[in-house]
Image: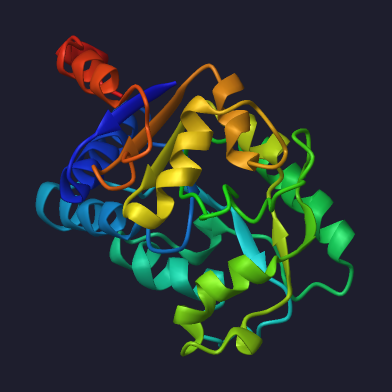
Length: 260
């Protein structure tokens, strides 16, 4: 696992630059898309590169991490709507090139299986963008999730719903109770994981992710077992890291040709 500590704007440029290089090398790459606040600056930078530098998404595919269950198709906080607004429409992605779990399906377990099959049929995810919750969840894999889990229905914790209430006018009761989410095992199938975290409120989760034991109590810690995982954090989110000085030194000494 590589840990990079830098200002938030620089982290976004690093992550977007990695996606840029991937798409120029492999135009039909498959990109895993996260929602929430963590990837927004990355999406801004990718949209800028598309508009100003000709970065093409014409042959690329996108797969979303998760979706709320039961939100109407036209709800502004439905994750399919959010991804369309924040990245897909800004880079010329056609609707059929971006897929997400079907939170409106009549048969949610069947929809979960179909989503797993769709990812596999696309050849798997080349780079998965991730954020992390204050309780250590990635996607909507809440504490206690199986480390081998696949796409499935999950019940959101009160903490997650409170954290997400800011997107629903501050009303926690308006946040859905259930979701469909890629499982930890599904996420671990991606060839490269790139997680971004900023702010002091994420410091304990980042500490557990990087330096704590692998545990279902902190689901993101499964990333320690991935052969190619990158953690991008600002100084505030790195505030609890015991080896922060080493991570800074290691990154400063890294050969430029390695990239992320």
